[in-house]
Length: 364
Image (tube, rainbow, N blue to C red):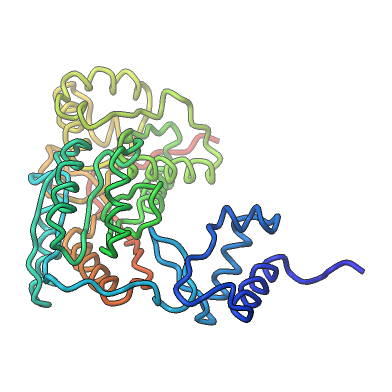
């Protein structure tokens, strides 16, 4: 007679039997999901369900970036506190970070922590120098990081893994490195981008361009949201309508400008990756005699001051900025107190509507 038990119970029974026999002891690190998947001939998703059940029974603890352990945080000896938190960001002069930093500092200072801040200028080399220095000094209780070029393979993962091995909690903000199983506090980039595209679709637009950042994980998520909304509306997206740029391109918009307008072509609307791009695009439109929204409708993400001071103020979805900083700081402190805390968080966002989207008649 075939075994009707759910497949995930195989893992649960194996762990329970291991505990009973003494083969598994308090603080032991469990085999990886891939190893368990091969061992039992089941999917990683099924393994995760089993681990989740055992976590609920307080038999296992899953620590992001480290692994799964027998018992409740039994393997994590407390470090001697330094009351010092390190913050690594990409750009000091971005319109997002100063307000995010204000959020960090409000929470950390309230709890008696000092904050040491470093900037990578979105350089993975500079990031490596900062991380090596932090490891050498070994005087922080936690690290909060905005990753550099998060969509590209990163050579610094070993430094993050070394910090995890030293029981230093790490939390990413705005984006993350997918190779590391570490928490991140950010805008829900995919969902917000999908809603930005839906604004244009609901206004009757069908020939919509999307401009996204290539070397940034947020850019890839926003692209995914854009494509999801277009697919839901059964609107085909041609290759020419999706335009990618990187961190260096935006520094010299004059070079990028001709390429963008050639690709946008006959599109009636465009979703921009962020306000920095949207501002430069709208100013270039004014120079070229392209009227917004009569000739081109524009929607963006971040709702920075740029959105309101552009020659034609544009609709934009707010980035939580300071609230993100507060949430990131709170979640990092909770990780310091409890390494098993689930510190991931995604912010929703509602658009600030300005006169940059024209309603058009949908052709039947």
